[in-house]
Length: 240
Image (cartoon, rainbow, N blue to C red; front, side, top):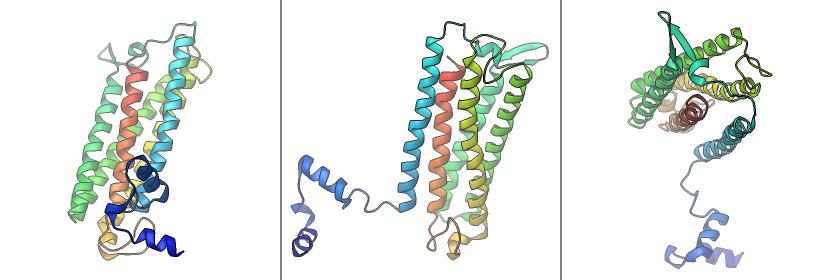
């Protein structure tokens, strides 16, 4: 115990250097996570694990697509909408992408105003983000219903490789679930910001000490991650 106390009382300059110091700091958690809050650390760990899950889904999709001997459906034809009697390829997907990327901008501004203690603008921007998320989920539901009506199922589709339906519903459904949960929590946190719970230090879920708007930043981390994942889904699933 006496030895440990002496080691902890050493000045920063006497710490181990090189790889040994790096390993010691990370393993002992003395400097690396000392100034990181528990909530943000847990969100980063969750996002890292979710990155592995989405990566496995996309790698599986690419493996199935490259290994199948049956022609893969052309996304430009499958995801086309008929407007004025003319099929427009990927128009709905382009609008969905624009909506979700725009919501990332409103979320970033909400975090900025939260740390400026401008709770009204922060809350309204979070509500705008949630509404854009709802629009995205609504358009995704329309896309699902259109493809189901045209005969797409998890076990087959009328345009070629039967794996198309299973990979489509799995990947887009998993991402849509993330967006839906994000919208729910955005409404919850926005309501707390609007009521002034973070200014008053009101007790409850997603609140902590007075004046701490960290929950807004944590929601921003989650929402930006959801947007980033959609960029990869858009590139690999709809443009390939």
